[in-house]
Amino acid sequence: MRRIERELAAATARIGVATADLFPKFSLTGDFGLQSESLSAISLVRSRYWSLGPKLRWPIFEAGRIRANIHAQSARQEQILFNYEKSILSALEDVENALAVYTGEQVRHKNLAEAVNANLRAVELASELFTRGLANFLYVLEAERSLYE
Image (tube, rainbow, N blue to C red; front, side):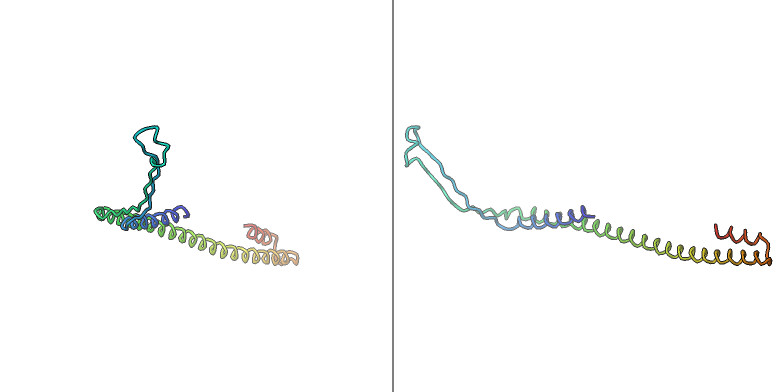
């Protein structure tokens, strides 16, 4: 889940990068060095040079390619978003199924506990009837068998 979330964030960032290509880029460049026609004059002050200047880059003739790249990155992001939503729904389905099973087991546990209590009471009653001589031992054995099941 985290991996696909990171993929979605990266795809969204790639849309921003692709969109940034539509706008001009400014930079400031500089150069410094030594230049001379003879090796002996290279150490002189007059052989030094420098240059400084702005640079503008704006690929206006590539706007179609840039817009196609933006469209492709948007489509990729939508596909990753679809996969992300699908994985979230799958996780929610797993949680819902687990909760349904848990609830069913809780009901089953309650019913089994009630059945044990009822069978314990039946064993007590059968034993009491046997000790008073009102029933034979077969009733006690049958009640114990039901309890142990």
